[in-house]
Length: 213
Length: 213
Image 1 (tube, rainbow over the protein chains, first blue to last red):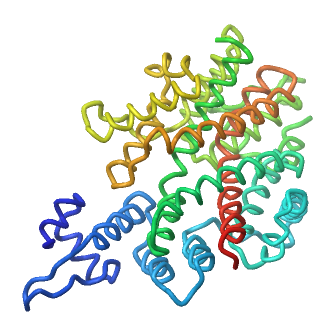
Image 2 (tube, rainbow over the protein chains, first blue to last red; image 1 turned 180 degrees about the vertical axis):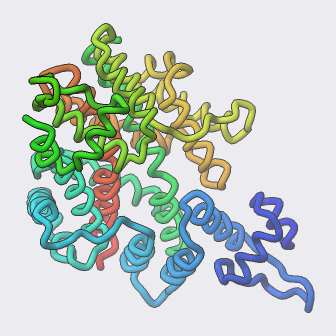
């Protein structure tokens, strides 16, 4: 398809598409002649992903480029590509290791991970920004006077394990590794508001069941 | 306790506490004499909640005041107080009813709610901002080219139902209705990052299980 068709199908303006092309967020089209390029479904898919990350996720263009480099690196395993792409997404500040709230958070997180058998996650924990992000979130609650211990965390971790199995099932519906990793990023950036709305709606439902209206 | 003790125990400065008192976010202490007031555990608890909402949730002071009015209104039922407090929290823009992406989202959300038996939620749906928030989130995905249907949503809704049961169990550990509603707000504002980190960590774990490292 031509640039104008790509713009129409994606609802992204031609000026924005040209900007993404210049910034290397979208691979160039296949040259048909010296002034015209042809675009295919992979361009449309990538354009949607870039727009989701930039416009909804508010992720800086430089970070988007970094994430896409990982997504496209076929020399890496699927797990590493997925991890690297998710790890490159913006996250809260690093926890201060000597802060007592952080030490308490780390102890309870490690206990939770050991209990539910995510031993590999705890072992590679020092490497994973997601592990550190979890510690930061729990430490913030500790510091504000709402401590969470392993008993609090374990049922939530078990439920997120079931949720992640669905996430991966959805991801595996896509045929190529690139599409799979792309869909995991969409899920991380865009699906979270859906999940949180469902949780609040379920809380309303459960409150009505327990206490009446 | 005195104002200085309240400041020390909460790690909130005296100037900030005085500002919260002036703005009506914190009830006045019990006057001991003309220049000195006494504060108790309920002040400390309320101060932590206000700080969590203002500093972490970045909720405007006027909204915090509105939420607290609902929390403290003993003439309302527990479910209504909980709902009113959660509903007053900031949320995305209202969905445009005639937008095709919104119509599609509403259809799939309603189908999901009917399937899992949240019929009351669908019935009071027009009233609940959380229902509209869910439709907005799903419509955003539709518009960006990542449509979600009832088959996609149902397993997530079922899992959030289990998560909400844990949320309410945690809430019911508190003895008074005010403390219960306060803890639900903390859970909505502060617990979400923990849940999302757990989901990402679970995704890593599940990816390693399926594809190796």
